Length: 125
Image 1 (cartoon, rainbow, N blue to C red):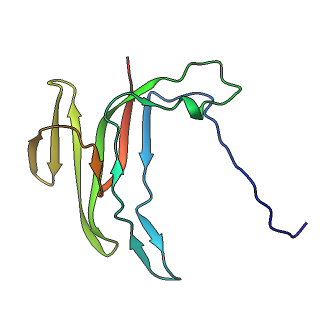
Image 2 (image 1 turned 30 degrees about the horizontal axis):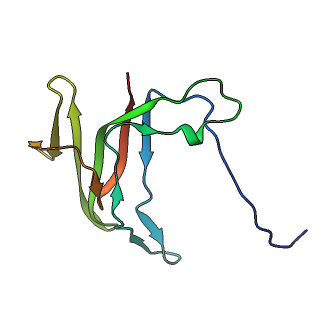
């Protein structure tokens, strides 16, 4: 009691969602009233995201694979910045970048980004 101990915490997924939304921590508190933006680049798997290692031992469902369908990006800092999105259009199977009133075709889905803020995945199949 009242003594620090090494512990391990593990959470398992019992039922996997059709749409998976991953919100990345991009801000870190540095004091009572201030925080910094975290600009670490992350690798974004565009297809076959496998979450089987997070399956609960009590789940009888096989974990699905997920495919990336969208990325919300934030450029700038806490005091101001700009949001964009890169999304898959399922009608023509092409990727597009959305920025305010401008839409442009993206060559490929983002796979490495320091501005990715929220990742959207859809269950494969």
